[in-house]
Image (cartoon, rainbow, N blue to C red; front, side, top):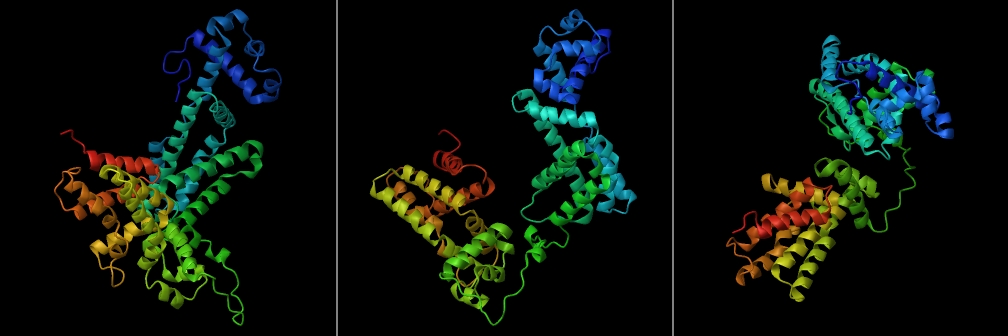
Length: 435
């Protein structure tokens, strides 16, 4: 944060005068925004409110800009709740209440409710966010304030989850849940400013606990958030006498349902029964098309694999140099990961299961979706003509290239396909050492 003028040193008469002017300016902004909108923040009004003279004002502030900077310094005050302090209080509350998360949250909300709803602090927060749209200093300070609030919320989560052994339901992560908790508190702060009678410590605590209860899983089920509201979403069973019509393209319906289920719960937790239900097909019908989940991945990615093969074949037909063909192939793989993230995530998980356990079915998924085999002939050709000097078997090199590409996309999914492909190409094609 940005310290206010005079902070951290002995207060002189001049400092007190500066603060008097700043307080008057803040009072005008906070308590009379209508007047500020009508005629702006006038120096004359500030001078009169401070009971001082123009000469005194301009000795402290050579320009109106300097005065506004001083007001901004006062607006950007540090948060009252620090992460170490809240963490220690959370531990104390848990110890005092038998390690109960509910009691801990209610205790913390009760402790900080006055701070969260203090009028001047609320007004400063609103003002800082207004300034942040056009003032880089204010924008940076607001971002730092949010990081501090997120750290506080994360401390509460960690202290509670450490004792309960809870995990988060998908799609929540610690980052998104703490952001949601901060947003809930901030929303209550805004409501309190306009309607204080409706916001109480009990309402705030109950809402945060409801959010935690929905996001937390305590039986190691690692289920999705949608499972919590399944009862709400459930519709009455259709009349048994009127069977549900089958989809026109059942294979495509299964692949669509699997894409959604893999994206929601991940490959390991996705269930064939749920996929069948969402596809509108009996389970036995789905098993005739796809005996297991791994073969659904094959069905979902078959056309994409054909496109990768065609891309390499086209590059060879055009006579491109082997390095360029490999770079193009890496980019196509990275783009495929971005376009088909649920299936590609499932491919990575299934391939890992094939490697360290038994394949799901009689034939390994790696035999159906053999990505390294697509580019291995190009590597072999490059070795023959001297473009590639590494003497390792082409298939081994192709497997290493493919694995790094998949892992890079898996771990850096927020980066663009171009960035991920360029990273892998730079490392594996050109190396880390200039020989």
